[in-house]
Length: 109
Length: 112
Image 1 (cartoon, rainbow over the protein chains, first blue to last red):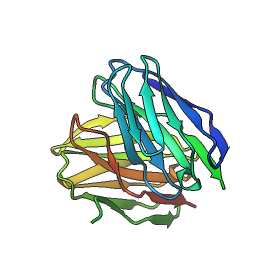
Image 2 (image 1 turned 30 degrees about the vertical axis):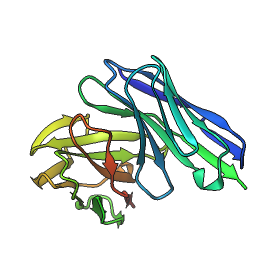
Image 3 (image 1 turned 180 degrees about the vertical axis):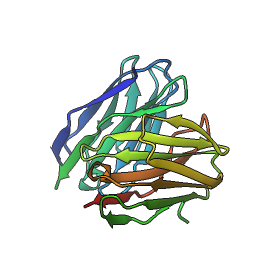
Image 4 (image 1 turned 30 degrees about the horizontal axis):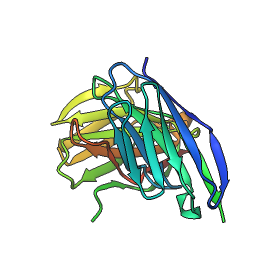
């Protein structure tokens, strides 16, 4: 069964304190690993797609990397507006998405 | 310009009632989905529709039924609501094989 786990469950950082979020997955035929950001009371917002091990994507203070078993979302010098829940999802060979439980990030000023 | 819009945003209803949630997308995507997000924030797929054809149904009770009048709309009908149905329901759309989903803003359903 395809599965996605994320750690930590919650993370509190001081503004400017860089860190990484982890997404570990098992999937039958990876057809993409996706990162989303979800703000309270809103739907998830697409951030990145990674397709193969070694691939990296960057957007502002965020960088996503992918290995054969996990993905990391690196946050460099975060700001309070980066506070959100970050969701990881994989798409399998059957084009189905499986989401992880998310990491709730709080960046304190 | 709202890409995926769902209504209502909040829905409070009594056990046993029947209710509907509407969803519309203006992105021209060919596939639409309904997800349930429970209190632990897990997003679980309920249905997807591609060209009016149901292609996923993940062990969802048959009290839940999707209705798609056209490829821009996927409504969710729920009969005989139960307390355990309380959750946030998200509509989403994508182009098959494309780059992830576009989600609506969610409908918070509370069954009392």
